[in-house]
Each structure stands twice: as structure tokens, then as C-alpha cells.
Image (cartoon, rainbow, N blue to C red; front, side):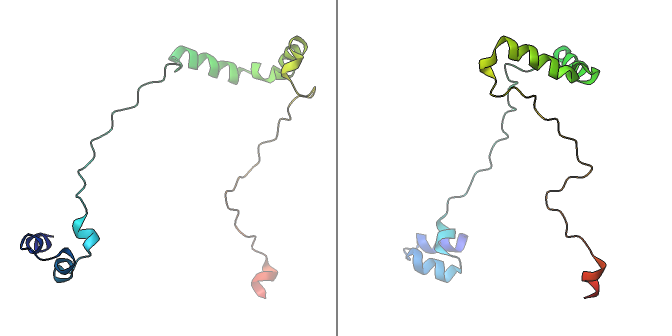
Length: 114
């Protein structure tokens, strides 16, 4: 770029200086980026769980109390039916054995032989 700069300072047009220096004019006139400073770490959210709260939630979820959801939903539905759109409990779907983003094509011996 120093050749382009020297040519433009010698009153040669930017178009001609770019051709002589062998660089695109857009590249030659582009401002140099200054390296960005390291961003400050994000502050902790105001509603972040404390270690004790997190431990309590994990203990509750893993203890089996979370499985009493049907009973809890029935009580909540009885108290505030306007908050619920159905009278049915949500379906608990079985966790699949495997999960794919892009499932590979199945390899059949008949396709391979053809």
C-alpha cells in the first residue's frame, strides 16, 4: 500500500495509482481497522440463581417430586381454570434412542448392488 500512497501523494489520480500499484482502488482507500478491545465480561443477570437455589431445584427435579405433575396440574386447573386451554395433561414423550440433525441415508444391500 505504500506504493499507492506515494503515488497519490505525487498528484497521480487514485484510479491510475491503483492500476500502477496493482491493487483495487477500493482496497487501497479502505480505512485500516483498529483491533477491537476485548469486550468486558457480561454482568451476572439480576435473577441469577444462587448456588443453594440451583442445588434445591436440581434436588427437586431429580428426586421424583417432578413426576407428581399430574396431581399438581389438576390442583392448579381446579383453582384457576381460565389459565388452561384444555383439561388434558401434556403428553410426556419418550426420549428417542438416537437423534439426528441430518439422518444419513440408509444403506440397503439391494441399492448397493444395482
